[in-house]
Image 1 (cartoon, one colour):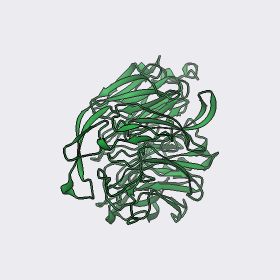
Image 2 (spheres, one colour; image 1 turned 60 degrees about the vertical axis):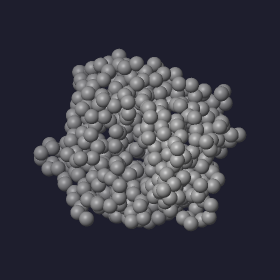
Image 3 (tube, rainbow, N blue to C red; image 1 turned 180 degrees about the vertical axis):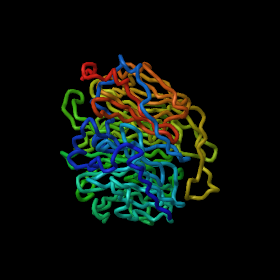
Image 4 (cartoon, rainbow, N blue to C red; image 1 turned 60 degrees about the horizontal axis):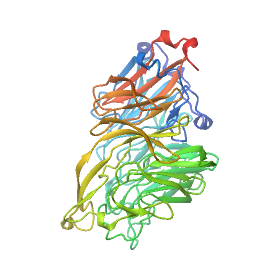
Length: 520
């Protein structure tokens, strides 16, 4: 396989490649500064909420393009960049870039060609001290030197020949680099693995399901997306994917733990502290890998350490993250597949809504009411903001396909995409904002009252968090498949978005960012 690192000429950039420290201490991850975005979600909580407030509902109409960067790749950017010491790091499958956050000039580009594994997309990198960690479609974890893009180590995490692949951004917790696997074939157990950041050696592994071949159990439970972490509890929170066979549950009786679940594992040894199954015995491919957002606050008048998830199956959950006890389960889109909620707060599947040869009308469709696009939580309003897609579908079982594999089909009947603002105390939807027939982007909120997202038509949107009304928009030529981030450098706030293979960075005119007008 070809490996290539291109380092931009310092003279052409008017800067020294080595002028930046490009080093991230674990304490900086736990306490991010305004001039950084050191994790996939920005911080350990997963809230994607920024304290920055230079860009406000009153002046966002003056937002303009600061710079763009083109990857010249066929793949769309789905990653959330990291920002450390003035350098942005972002990815598409098989590629990592380091780009100056002030100018958009390339510092270096790493390319590793792989032909195996699914190249469906890539979420980004993680960083520990001077190293970046990057997963590949053929299931390698590669450590790159942040200053140069040179390879420090290359470790195999899973066997691509069995049907595994990897798309996720790792999660760094102190001296642990935590990665998860992807895949949709039968007899593939999902798992999380923690490796040593200096050597790549395995520290622990947590398996979502029993070993393949265990009687009356399922496989699956892939760990597609990046989780979150509570330093006080020393617990990592992660969502897991569907069981397999996917639409045929007859060969896997019972609830099929821990598929379609939110789990809490100890960061030091990988032991399961608790698990909460959002879709017991899933037969509709509703992964529960959506971001488990961590919020500290009152719930119905009592202080709680909470975990919130808007899950693909159409339900919004609030849990006590110390114990996994359910506090709230409520639908946030059409859901006709249950017979109610059990004593644990879990939806009760209705057998009449399982895929059948003559078809079943089910809400939501296979894509779910939400999917991989990141949500946000705004602490000022208590609103959970999520890219949602109310939908209906026809599910079919196809016995001719056998007991294994997909063993059926899903045909969309109707759906639309919208941003929903959910009151976490009640689950009531306070407002919605239409973003088109299908798609949209992840969500970012700020202390100034802005919600930043995108629509199906290729527009970047700035909404008022309080009521969802459009304050400003700009066309990017293509829909955003990533989630926005924001940062401040030299007293100037930037908003970073992407569309297709192009990175866009936005800011107010420099005259509008004088200290007297920052509103901080």
